[in-house]
Amino acid sequence: MSWSKALFFICMGASLVGCGFRPLYGTHNDRLVERELAIMKIEPVEGRLGQMLHNELLTLANPKGRSAANKYTLKVRLSASKSGLSVAKTKFATRSNYQLNGTYSVFDHILDKSVFTDSFSVISSYNSLKSEFGTLMAEKDAKRRVTTEGAREIYTQLSVFFAQKRNGHATGTP
Image 1 (cartoon, rainbow, N blue to C red):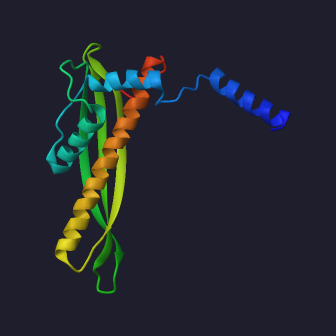
Image 2: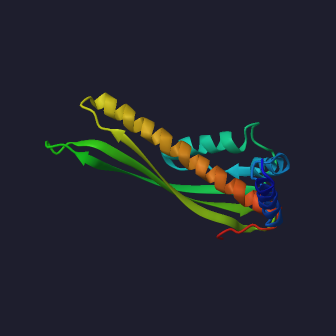
């Protein structure tokens, strides 16, 4: 490696350290974020999709089981829609989208106020088949995918929020 390339990489590394860049999933930060997520109560969400999202969030945020202490409460509201995309000559939709929209907020019990609010939107496509059962199973799988991706989106945003909070840079939309 030439000296100029080595100098370039050293300067890039120094600039990242100087700007306050920290990886979200580092060893120290990871444990702090996990602790914050573990003391968060996740309110039940209405409907079957809400139940699926709730269960996925519990698995992501509390892999070791629920905590007895709750410093935060997470509330999620969902709405879902289905739309036909591709229409055959027989006016039969052959491809559909299943969309899940949600808003969520984190309430801090110590501060007695909402500290973070955000929203998400996830879309999953599936084929409409000649078999009703096949279409039903494809739609069911699309629902599973949107709830899994929605839960991951919430988990990621909350992880970033708690990491920034620990570093003194938290910004929420109360």
